[in-house]
Length: 308
Length: 282
Image 1 (spheres, rainbow over the protein chains, first blue to last red):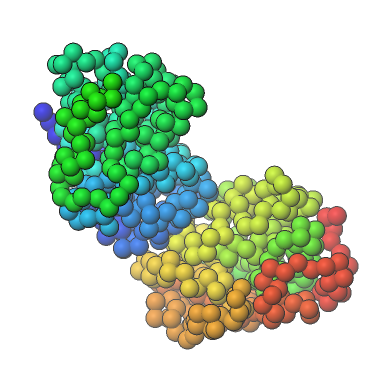
Image 2: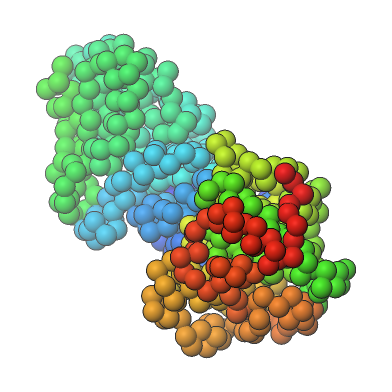
């Protein structure tokens, strides 16, 4: 199975688009290497802005670039862009409606053993509670390509979280369906519905395979967009009578919270929220952290078995 | 850098206009029973010189791509800014009646639903980074517009100001001017007591900026600054020494007037001191 890091798919696509569209800019905070923007900076220096290690400044600078009709993508570790510069994202971009795309790479626990200073496990909660930003968590490389093409044309401010490492492709390289605000239904089943986002989509699909082998039929939804939220898909998922959400995020305020808000108010349904516990996290590689907290095919399958 | 300034109005006329805008601002604050009187008064000569002389803007086309950019980073001084924008015709003056009323777009900090306001400001330390982006965009696009950012002196304690100071110098943004309303007071007291700034000019010079100082309540001195060509290759910082509450005898240099609201009697006293009979939008 082909694998690719979402950040690599993003920067490859952004460079292709920026060659043709001179309004596309990339801004970085000494992060061109970690984002994989080195080729972009070398080839299109007039469309690249180095801001130094200063995320607040980078967001403000990007808002200023946008005021001139440019389309800046400001890129760096999700941990810093979700919190260090949170007020600039809130005021300069979301509240002011400036066309800036905030690209948080190495999100969730991608940085593994670097520890919680470098983890971004509260970004969905933060931006869900901040009006004026679209929020995306692509599942794999091909979907990131489609998302990047959308972002390059969109005039809406957005936050995107992607991971660091290579992830197996969930979608076909040349056919990754992506409509902002519309979840992708990857499997249809009757016993339960699993709703996942980001890298957890792959593990959730693997869990569905395990369950299918046991005669348990589940739906799988890829909720790549957290705002605007696809409420219709959530209500459809609830028809199975049991909804399990899976995310690389704190169990408070993320995908699970979003789904629970919809279901509690419109169609009360039994739920489980799988994610990272609201405590000081175990450290290790991201795979080891996932294994520790049951964010694996077997862990997810077990949650379905136990909850039915 | 081309000389700044338009030379359309003389200093005396601009001073008269500045005092009328002071009357507008205290009237707005009095009616709304909320506002930031002291900073609005200290900054109104700067705002008037910018909007009646320096800035190339089109009130009937606020998003004209080649407009000079202005950011009121010390967003709490919004009343004077709105009064100037209204007088320049960005929106009807009668709308000043709605300042801080429920549902109005004219609220306690600049809001870019208001024609002429570029981005929402009011959280301190945000304006200069945005100004750096605006000035950098002009350089990259080959446009001749300039960016001006008006900050407070208390605001200088925000670290993001200095992130942007580094970036402005790094990119040699000689189309960017930071103006600091150096009135010496912030909400808790004197700036040197709360968080000392001096030697303030040396700090900006050390960050690589072309630094000048002027009396920020002297229209002629401000015009002289903006009409004089500045060095190329670096951004400009004008430390504008001002008096908080300028023009209102009861408020000058008194920290409680940071956000005190004038009474009806003080409004009348203010009009008299400013040589203004009243406002033309009530």
